[in-house]
Image 1 (cartoon, rainbow, N blue to C red):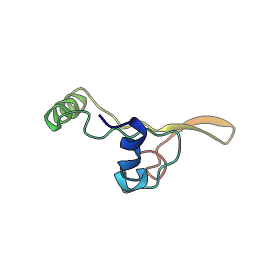
Image 2 (tube, rainbow, N blue to C red):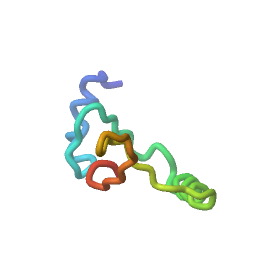
Image 3 (cartoon, one colour):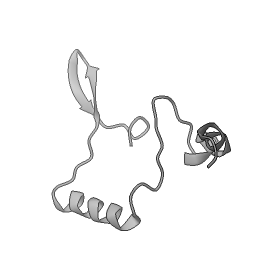
Image 4 (cartoon, rainbow, N blue to C red):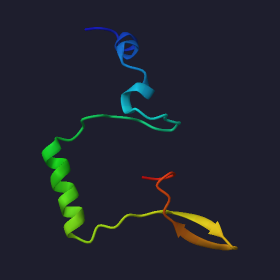
Length: 73
């Protein structure tokens, strides 16, 4: 069995794994779920009124929900 440090060194650079620039704290664990399970979970989400969420931001001295695909997707 190889040592953990040797296995980590053999992994691709994190920015090559996702195709986008990543900032800490992000942990990428690809292929954790089978595609069939992902599809089922997405279908259940959509069947039960799934709705995109945003994030909170202060606008005109009030905290409001904002949806910005450039910030959260």
